[in-house]
Length: 278
Image 1 (cartoon, one colour):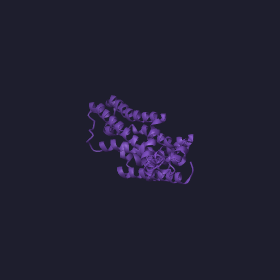
Image 2 (image 1 turned 120 degrees about the vertical axis):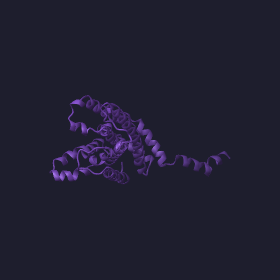
Image 3 (image 1 turned 180 degrees about the horizontal axis):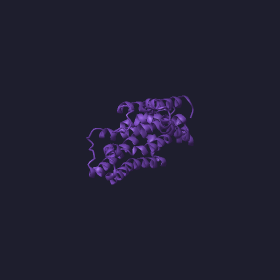
Image 4 (image 1 turned 90 degrees about the horizontal axis):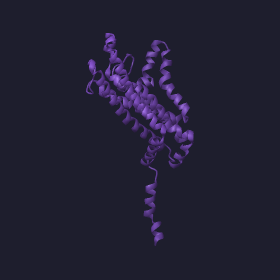
C-alpha cells in the first residue's frame, strides 16, 4: 500500500510540477547567479558612485569659479544636465558588466550547465536580460535622483537650480535610468552574440565610443547626417536637457533608434543561442 502511494499519478504529477523548468524558475536562478558574482557588486558600486559623484564634482567646481565665468558660460550652464552627468562614467561600468553577465559563463564553461538545465536555451537569455535590466534601472534611477537633488542644492547659491517639476527635469532623471538600462541590455546581447569577454567588450567600446570619433573624421556634411543615428548619440537624447549640437534626433525618436540597435543585437544573440552549441 505504501508503494502504491509513493508511485501514484498525483504524487508523480506533483513532483513534475515542482521540478519543471519555467521562466520564473530560470529567472530566480539567474538572479542568484547575478548577485553571487563579485564583479556584479563592484561594477554596480562603481556605476552608482560615478553617477552620483561626477555631477556633484562638476557643480562644486563651477560654483566655486562662477564669478570668473563669462556671461555665455553662465547662460549655458544647465543644472539639469549636470545633475545627471554621471551617466558619462556609469555607462562604461554598466555596459562592461552587461557583457560579463553572460560572456563570463562562456569563459568558465558554466554556460553548459545552464543550458543542460534549460534545454530550450532562450529562457536563460531572457532571464539574464530581465534580472540585469531590473537591477540596473532601480539602482540608476535612485543614483540619478540623488545626484539631481544634490546638484540642485549646491547651485542654489547662484539661483540656477531647477526643481523636478521644471521642463525636461523629470524626463532627464528617468531617461538616464532608461538609457543605462538599455545600454546594459546591449552589453548582454553583445556578450551572448560574441561569447568572448574581451571581444564583446571591444565591440561595445568600439560601437559606442570609437565610432563617433571615426565619424568626426568624415566631411562635415556627411558627419552631420550620420552622427545623430550613432548608438550613443541617439540613446543619450533621453537623458539630455540642453543639446550643444543642433544636429540631433528628438528625445524619444533617438531613444527608439537606440532601442532598435539593442533589439537587433539581442535578436541576433537569441538566434545564435538557439541554433549553435555553447
